[in-house]
Image (cartoon, rainbow, N blue to C red; front, side):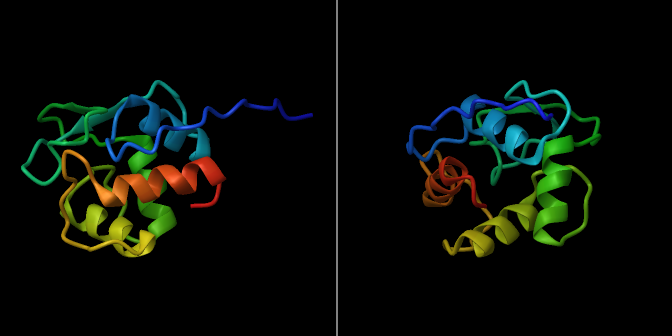
Length: 118
């Protein structure tokens, strides 16, 4: 029997913080559900992903790879402009390729994660 995971309900605040990252990790059942999006390359369009751990390794993150696979795009594990645009398009929000400090795309992501239907 598979262990039942209690999903937290996210605040719909439009900020991509640790709770949103952890919920995404739970949704895709990736290893290390720590609420951190590891090994990201910091650029102006992704600097407001507050859960990101920025470094220059370009290793990428398991949860981003899972998201990229789900979106049907290349899987490098980096939350780059192409990934952001593909996510925004999937969510039906303006595909400008940027995560704002308070983002309509993140709000919609949070709503869908709460409903458990990405």
